[in-house]
Length: 149
Image 1 (spheres, one colour):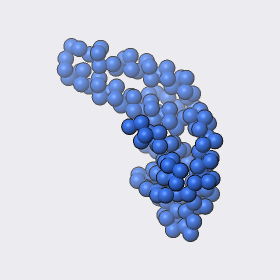
Image 2: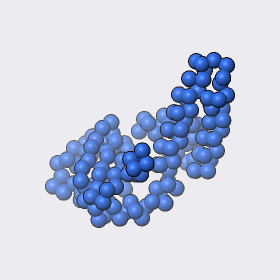
Image 3: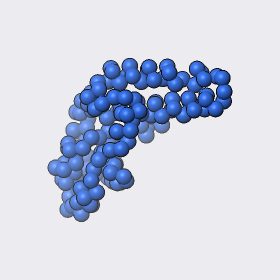
Image 4: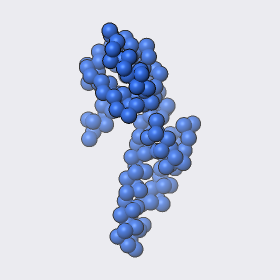
């Protein structure tokens, strides 16, 4: 997905980067781009504010899809995907958002349009998703993001 690639490029990390290293890179970039360091002109301070917001957004996104993060929540994810029914799903720009009856919502990245169409046309969307989506694509929970926002 373009968003994942762009965020990794912005932070200068790869898909093999571990959380500890990601955190270090993030802190160093925030030190370099913190708006308080750019007091000489309003224009440079505004640029630094925008850059730091983008860095923060990229860091939080990459943490949410990191293997370590997914491993920590894998039991909850498995419980949701095996026992809860799909309430609703939405597809936009190769991102499939699935809401479940237990209140959890997950985003799946790089889902081809053809797979989404098969999900829509499936006799049992839940069964189709268990076989072809849940463990096939990079995902993140957005339930916590919505609750904390």
